[in-house]
Length: 341
Image 1 (tube, one colour):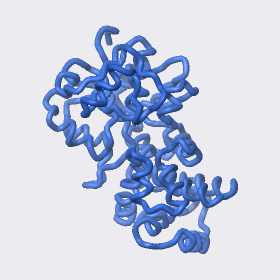
Image 2 (cartoon, helix red, strand yellow):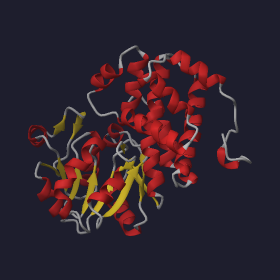
Image 3 (cartoon, rainbow, N blue to C red):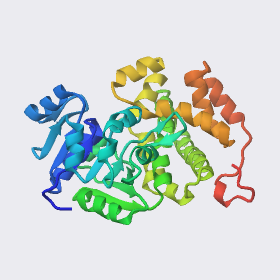
Image 4 (tube, one colour):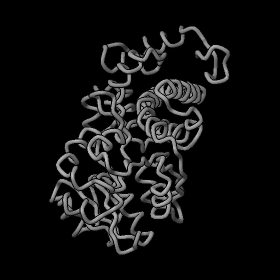
């Protein structure tokens, strides 16, 4: 890739803005596409994105744009940082321009209709595109503030992986490669559900033993589910699995953790989401995940328990009692004799 050619970032939220800044720091031009002309103008004049990354300077090389077709046409490498609910509708109108482009999804969500991951939606919209997934323990604010961070670019397309490593790898941001696109992407989507639970627990004074139990059993549960759908279990021992799960379940900066914390304080789900003011993908993921787990007959007691609290009128105390009464099975699925946990 020539340095002169700009790189596109679609989505002016916190992570899209952080990625655009990283690209510019590494000597590349970045076009940050957003729907809202007022937001684009605010970034242009104030070099700030106050709604999503307050206090972080948006670098001069980041060009805020609102013409999607022109942006896509001008760039070969495109990072897609749109909410899962908006991704299909936003990109469908420019589908014809995406053939041969390198599309990298950074969205950690699942489309309810047909349990589709973002890379699968991209493949449907643009079957001739080259597709990858970027995922890991990557809180947007910390990326923007240069906390030492590592991520995973996942794609069977090795040239795409090398390209993403070349443009993003920098002083405070390391990029590892994986061929398990499905496992990496599923890890990023699933952990959001458990972060809601961790936030609720934190608001209720959960102990360190409890926190450790929750994270570890969450890892077992999400790995079990992902392997049933064809992912590599080893992927979940890496940054996109346990790494992302830890940061999302322990950090108050995590949006899903914040929603859970508000629920633990007694707010309704609507109030909790409204207070956040951003998309918390875990709420939508929980609904589709419970249905898929039942359909695939995968044992996911934590998912069932959280669903009962959020959507079935159960109290957290009732669900905890039910979980603690559950029959103990093996600790780690993939070293047990019968494969059940």
